[in-house]
Image (tube, rainbow, N blue to C red; front, side):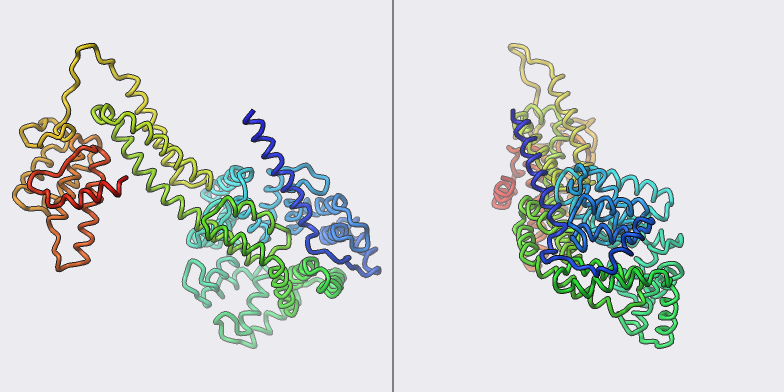
Length: 583
């Protein structure tokens, strides 16, 4: 019954989400969309002839009801035709339609991600940011995204320049893993070194903006010039830079050169299409900023030589950002309160197709910072617990003395790791801990199951000196104990007041797996630091005291009844503080 209720709840959430995403397509088309009557026949004829650009434009007309009745099913049909021809804008819209179940498509997570990745591979920034958000939003996307990324990684490691470029923007945007500019640079460099023009352009931008590397306009120019051999965006960027942007010295000759190159890059056959986009831009700027922004970007994609339209695009993007400011702020506040659950609930409100890239990039980066912060704390806590479980697996005496508590620790360990993987299933450190923990816990249970039952009247096995509270001396230590010789030498140095030399040996033996006197070793190690405190050296005194507390805590983890060695009860206050902190 519980499972059925849970499934009904999930189905209801997806149903609501699909309506939100479907409605998002026309979120900013409150006013009737406009299309000059003279343009409509030309658009339809070109679309039916198979021109992908016009197929996207036809889909746009049906989506917004511009010159035709609004019809998302008809819009989806035209987007699909263009997407199959490799048009990245259509692939992006189709990916969203598959994800929402709008346009007559059944909801299809795998299909949605496939189209979004195709668009992202071709440089569609919105598709990349959308993928990053979908991973953060809910579990239905996470495993599929991780599987796709793993496929790219395998190909990239084999030397595929395209896969290396893809890994670059995956790390750049934080798709399925925390954003990592240094990793992005590494993969962009590998791809750019194989003459991948898109990677060269991306690498140039990272040097230009100082992302993951100190800003270096000269190096940026080198990579943009290489990319410009095939990438029209790089040619436009070079003209912009030589006009005196981003720290590059103004150079009129270079501006003329790249303006001429850009003008030659635009085929005259594209002019009618550009005229239609300019008409849409002029007609829709005030009424439908989202649709106007689409037209604006299409102009830039087809004719980067048109430098004036860039400022118009930026202004439209700002207007859209202002309309979403309240929702963005609320999602950001949830992250400030460390409430990932609330953040995920709010995220669908801002995932409409024509979002402001800067706003969502900022949210994605903040969400990853919170997840990483939480998971690194979880990693440390889980590691401490796992070390105790692993020790218990090796030590029969410790298992017998702490069996009940160990079962509790195992439960806490699993909960910590599971919570971390729920936030980020691809967290490599937590996945490694989970595998290590699974092995240790299985070994622990096996040892418990194999333990011989105590017969009536049988005496309990003799405890080790530090387990029984008996004073540790060289006489009651077993001669064949691994690390024993170092331990005996450390005791001798300790008794002689040579605390610094003794600490090195005590530290050595506490790292030996299964060492039976590990608790006592940690106690003596803590005392060696406390005994060397010089009140005149305040910074060192604080460090040594903290070390003493930490080593006492480690000792107590292995043996709660252990005490300070005779003659060193002056450090009892530190010992008590370690106990309190451990609780």
